[in-house]
Amino acid sequence: MKKEQTTVDIDFAEAAVPQYARRGIVTMFMIMLGFTFFSASMWVGQELADGLDFGGFLVSLIIGGFILSLYTGLLGYVGAETGMSLDLLARKAFGSKGSYLPSAMISFTQIGWFGVGIAMFAIPVANELLGGSTAAEWVLVIAAGACMTASAYFGIKSLTLISYIAVPLVAILGTIAMVMAVSRGDGTII
Image (cartoon, rainbow, N blue to C red):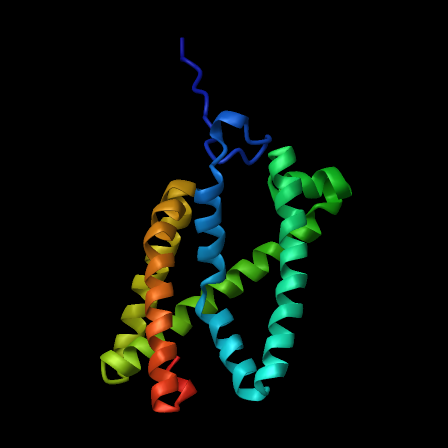
């Protein structure tokens, strides 16, 4: 007689995350900050700074920050109260078939985020540190892609570890880059 195996879903894809498995506020803060400390968002900020005067930049920063805070705050509140993932919330709101659209949208944006993030890492690093070699770019793309895929495979534990390392490093290196850019008068260094 064959013994039946049960699979444990540590990511809670089909059920609300139980209270014992939820992460604390500091861990979630670091993970979410890790998502926003992203080269593409920094690049957009630099483009805004180049295209606006200081007052216009501050106004756009405040309005954009308010909209993003309101949107993500409401999503975070609903997620924290229910313990449900985006897919489960979409099923509850739009039904089983209707949930395909938000799931497809998030899938395509994450594919784009993956590709843009890797390119925005690999190309400047290859240019600045490795002489702009196309082979170096490909090696960096493959290595960064493998690391990003591994972090997704290992789930929340790896995202937590990466965030606790990357967020302070990005804050320190970003500050250094801003100081260097201001002292040199060259915004492209960022």
